[in-house]
Length: 255
Image (cartoon, rainbow, N blue to C red; front, top):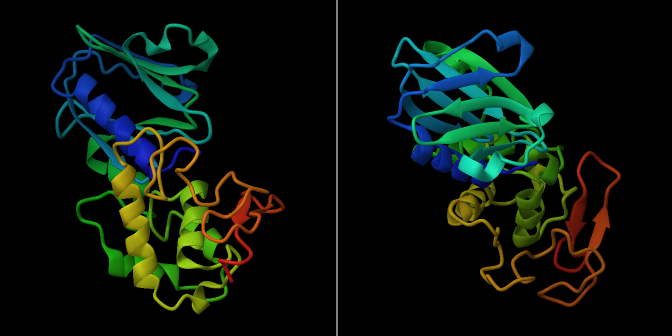
């Protein structure tokens, strides 16, 4: 599933393509909203909130196109969608000079602009928001002391934007096993700040880097590296896919 930094970049891409332009076509291919036509409306802004995207059209009394990429979704600009099978297309937005196509979107709905943020009211602090609230996130993180750390990091109600790559990488950097109860984390504020740093530094990168080394094959500490040597100590990285998400860890560096 795309993580918060991917959604942030997608919002920036849509913003460049659509904001300030009048829609000349709005083709919604979700049955519940198939009759909605925002043609003639001007795109006011594009927002990302955690893993959610909002395209606001038509001023304060207008509509908001809310989408979530889930596992396979994407927004494609211009000719990027030329070879996309029609059955994968969920929405087409066109202006006089550009085209944005939502493909395989896990969620697509048209909301009243006035109430669109109710769709994300359950989310914790957004890691890529300028109004990031680390102390709220730290309190959320430790609310259930027995809950495993990786599972808690993935809960968007704790803080919004972390996916499985970052959850595994954070556990390694903090020296904890993914299964460590959050009550045993000595400095939860430091954990959430490191999470913020990770996403913030990667918000403009296509290739995600957590090690500080941008060379190919050296970008991540443990994620996807099962059986390979730990970059710190040389011990083989372990993995476990018994749960909802696959976990990776170094048995020497993480305790």
